[in-house]
Length: 328
Figure (cartoon, rainbow, N blue to C red):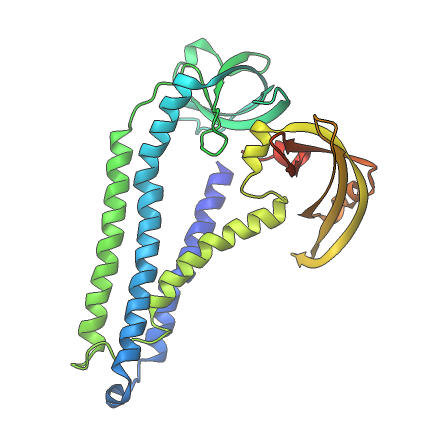
């Protein structure tokens, strides 16, 4: 619950600096703007700024449309494919924490499961499950679940419980469509508002690189890629982390060298690990992993061997085993 509240807080905090703050700053600076200067501005440059803003907002809106609406159908299709072609695995529940509110109609648990991945390597994975049949007490420590693993490592979800039923939540779907439509209307309305109250009969000459129509869209796009960058930097994991976890083989890698890259995030150094390991075909590989290491975890840089995962079809794709255990 605290984790969800934290996510909501930071989402609202970032949203404030993406939309209200640029608008407040822009109109505060331009409160005493001299309208007479508009006629001296190049209309073609202004139209260029306008086109740039439209392109940015189209990218933003298309991204949200895919994430909020299209992704529902993609996930539904993937679930149906897993139900039909998934690989069966038996998972043991090694921890179960109830995270739903006390007065919730259904209990929600954060489970840590232990099972073999597609390469028959034992992994531990955390997942959140809502118990639709509480009377069966299925989600207790020590009990076992039958899973179906996704054969396609490039698509999510990576696994489901074999009793999962694939249905479309109509209420959630309608709310997502409504949210996207409201956002789109709000963007269009702001274009109309800006033109009516800032053009003074001189067209789009008021458009500039610092206008909220550009800054807000750019900031939202920046957040999208900034979050991905920070996550990969802090965790030492790339976008292929889940692929390596669910399709990789665990092995011990010899730590040949550890050095600092010179990069620091929150005063924590990024370390470069030079590793040597042997794959399942007895080929020796030497590879490098970079990771932000906390000051309290510097002892990990002094180990002789470190457990890693690698993809059998591409042994150069590797990740630290400990990092993979912590991803959801």
